[in-house]
Length: 159
Image 1 (cartoon, helix red, strand yellow):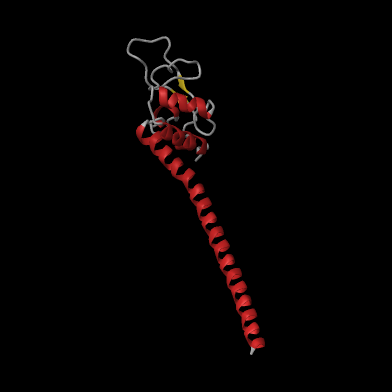
Image 2 (cartoon, rainbow, N blue to C red):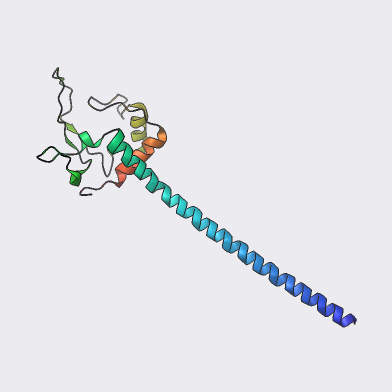
């Protein structure tokens, strides 16, 4: 009888060991799945920021109107999106400081991310001065400015 009780105790310990092993394996698998899901969410955020940036650039701030060349019929040349263009408006008073071209901002913006964020949130350029008209002194939130930069960096000529 005593032998049988110890045998059952050994079986019990073995069963506990295997159950613990499989429970730990299940927990590790679950943790790995959750980590993979988090990394997918992390990679989805930039595309959401790019989409928001595109909306801000093309439909709110209207950057494409000055920074994209036009076709002969006056429509935007989307094959050269945000690659810089002649400024098609002139001031009524003949301002000698009026720019003749709007610079390229698509692909590789003309300043660091920090400087671009400063421009888009305060209206101040790297010179410490506001940009010349017709550039508007935007007051975007930092999140919107970052989204704009993400979009500008995603733009490639011929897109």
